[in-house]
Structure formats: structure tokens, C-alpha cells
Length: 199
Image (cartoon, rainbow, N blue to C red; front, side, top):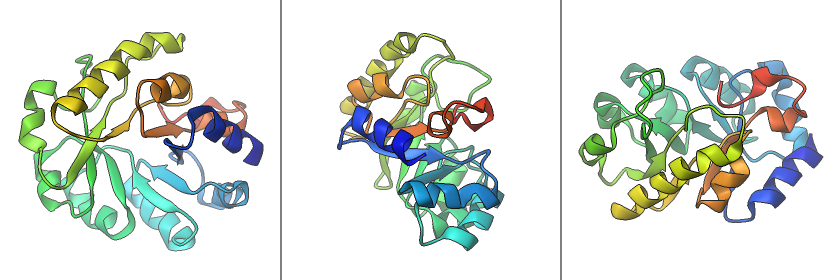
């Protein structure tokens, strides 16, 4: 895995943080990420975050990339340095760590995120950037307009951090200004799609 991780880092460049998505990585397999030299992991579920942090707390920098419920903010506040997926005002009021607001640019009801028109309600000292998940597509180029739009939206509000791009399109996201990319299956050699961070 180390070679795959280093290949992703080389492709996106030094200005982009590679976040290893661990939604489907069992606790017992987290040691593989340590051995590969992974520095930042992103977890989707607060319960899993708590369990993995208890075992590997000092091994990684921890990010939360899943749906954040307000009653789970205590766990995130205690363990994480950044949240990528803020889309609830109630969670925002309880959050004590920096966050990226997840924006639903395509208006897909099946995906989390706030409407761009509602973004101003979330802006405050704790919000440092934006994130998005474009519609699923086999061609990475299909994601480019969405990444470009998010970059422009962040610029409009003076936000410097952008979390966009997953296994299938992370290189396009980096070209369009991502400062974080979230990857899963590419680190595991593509042998199991269940590791894809977009799942």
C-alpha cells in the first residue's frame, strides 16, 4: 500500500492533503495504514471513529467525513482536527473544531449538503472551506465543472480550503484547486470497491 499512497501524493502534489477514507476499513486492518505511512485518515461514522481513535489515536491526524449529527459532535470535538461534511446548523453550534461546509451543487436529494443559497447561514470563524460530492460518473472529467464551481464559490466567500475528489476523480479535483482529496479503494489497489470513499 505504501507505493500506492505515495503515487497518489505524487500525483496531487505537495499542496494537497491525501485523506485515507476508512469507512469500510475494520479496526484490525488500520495497522496497514500505519505501515504505509498514511498521515491523515477520514472516518464516516462517529462510533467507528471513537473505537479507532482509542486504538490508534496518536498514529494519525483524524478527520470526520461523514454525515455529522449534532449528538455526535462531542466525539468529533475530542478526536478530530477537521470536519469535511458540515451541513447542519445544530451541529455547527456544537462543533469546536474547524469545519468545511458540504455544498450540494447538483441538487441531488440522495446526497447530503446545503444549497449554495443557504451557505451564508453557516459562515463564521469555525468554517474554513467547502466540500462537495459531484454526481457519480465513470469519466473523471464529468466532475471537473462541479469542482470548478465549488472553487469559485469558496473564492466568493474568501474560504481557502476545498475538500473534493475521491478515488475516481481525485486528480481532476487537485487540478481544480482541491486542498484535500479523500481516497479509499485506490490505496487498496482497487481490488475491493467497498473501500471507495464515495460509498
